[in-house]
Image 1: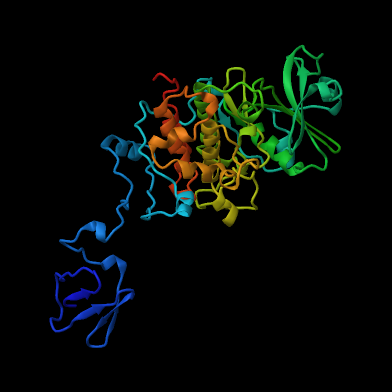
Image 2: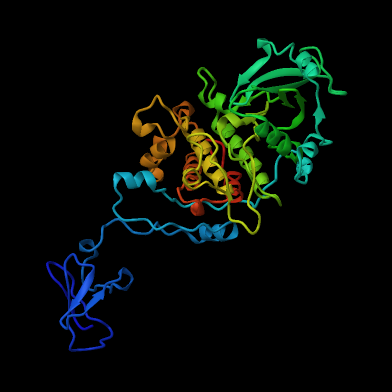
Length: 449
């Protein structure tokens, strides 16, 4: 090519290398090809566009930069040290819809200390994963679980009376019961060991398969941030599970129940860290487990607001070393379910990461993942946050008003950023749970930090 001419305010440039001085090319204003005076057509590729000199960039490109702002040296070291995150290509001059679909990436701080995925303030010596059982009989014969009779559990709950009812979900009703600490036999109400007894509804949304999955995973998974399964009952059509009692109830009740005292900023960070530890334990084990139903109602709290994951009815064994994903029917909860998994059916640990991002946004905003009482633009929490958070100066717009400004602004900025990374539509751009935990464990939780 020789000299290329672009008409109507188009830039003129000279090629550094001229193959044929006699050939002249004229590029049409809106054409995707270049016409030559010899009648040949040469396709123009975007990658080969030459740099234009002595022309103001404001007249050629949009003023908004194409790439995200550069990170500092220490931030780059952290990403290399933990888990490097690929950065998606952003498009200039985003439209209103682009703002909904695009995740904002803000720089993250360097963690003060390096933490292990399964590290916890509690005794981690109880953390273990037993071998995967092969049959139902092996699952039910676990030496770590007690097989209760229906009559024992009926006595422990005063015949499943309404006064013992703690809550109700898709699986069935949960009752508070009492067992003798020695022998785990039924005890008088108010004496002995308090337990939570979940009774399956025979024709509910979850059946024997989900019940067996719960026994399987919680029967062999032991970690301070997973609810302890004490035993089960399989008697005719009755399917019952017996757990340790969690006096703090669910995170959902603390965030959304009317007249419930507001969670302080320090406690919200503590809950997020505990839940992240639980997911790390599942994802980083030799045989990874995908939780698949991570949400506020499945995060239970003890008296000191330590978070524990419950309800493993939808849990699934993760892909092996030779696999990239598990193909399965789509199951989960609206608002928390990974949109990529919804459209493809490909299940990976990054599906849990998406759900964690949604829960983290709920902790920050005090809003539900899906709120039908809101207008159309505010129903979906993830879309609403993406519309309002464009930089760190706008973080206050999404924060829960119940906090009354009593939170660390820097921590809120970092937590919102990590949550936005988690809910990226592309799974490959979501950070692993070990990276998320490393950041959250080093967040200052006090408002005056």
